[in-house]
Image (cartoon, rainbow, N blue to C red):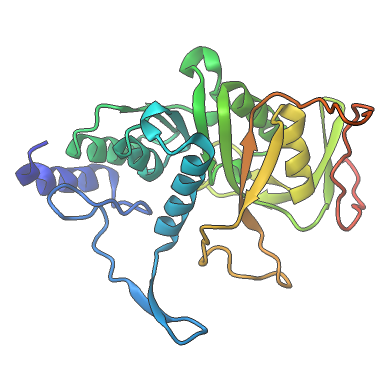
Length: 295
């Protein structure tokens, strides 16, 4: 796309599909999909000052650093899947870093904006599909070194969340990043494939950021999310705290944070040689112990 035409093309996207709602990407002509943000200067406890990152920028830094650290730092060797990619920021950044990227998004309005930015930057290593993430399977999309499940898992209801995590594992070759809300209460039990998980129901809407087709979603407890990720086949699960995402990890709920970033690694189970192991896995305990019944 000729830089001189970017403003005209951007306005045409807005006229047809509405304003960008979340992903403020810089364009080749120096403009932005939403607009330039003036960084806020904040004073740290030691008296020094720094510029505060936006919430989206901070999350992008976290996810990119996690991928670099976990996968050797060379993005050009990676095939990446961005699930429910919205306006494309995370996948577009990874494409700019050299990865081969596929983005799946359920709303065409969002995809039009993502495709516009890809075209503006001349990115030939990213493609977008309009699809429901609940249709994810390796037969359609293949497999990926890195799967991004950012801000979508907590918009699905049971039993879809369990099948969805199974499908994420099926298409993952190395690692999956799940950025999601978790429940602090085990208000109800969800039975799936002979196992029981705990959490609570959450009412949904159908805005540009909400669910598609379901009126409520299921938020699992941290313990149940850990268990689910291991049950589907991830050999280790990690919770990422740095780089820090201050705005959405402000301490609340009596000092606890209800949204975080979880990384599932796909590998081979290690057999111990220096001791005798029963081979049985300890289940991650619910704290406090749940008092839940299955409806």
